[in-house]
Image 1 (cartoon, rainbow, N blue to C red):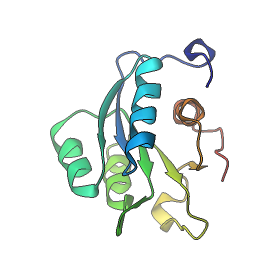
Image 2 (image 1 turned 45 degrees about the vertical axis):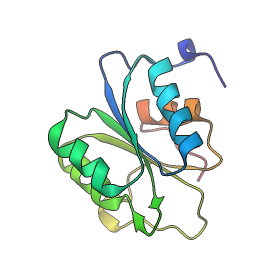
Image 3 (image 1 turned 60 degrees about the horizontal axis):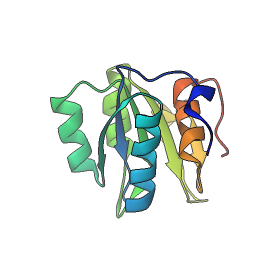
Length: 129
């Protein structure tokens, strides 16, 4: 892991973390907090994520593509419609993005949470995938 001072500050930013693997979810939320942000969640499924999207201010999001039998695409689409920066994280080789989400950065697992935060902060940077 890298030092939080190595990348831009998330102070005042509320970052939704959607990940169904407990340890990855807690590590990602910790990376958000280390960068000065507030982690919303982590939550493990689309229903819980959409509840946050509808009820809270979300400034950015880190979304696992595959959540059990569903994808996080509806969450990403709702966030993009609000102008929220999104980063996908996936461990699947056979993933695909719908055309309306093909500009969302994708980071391949295993992902260093600090690096994912960097991609989130600088959408011009590309993930590993």
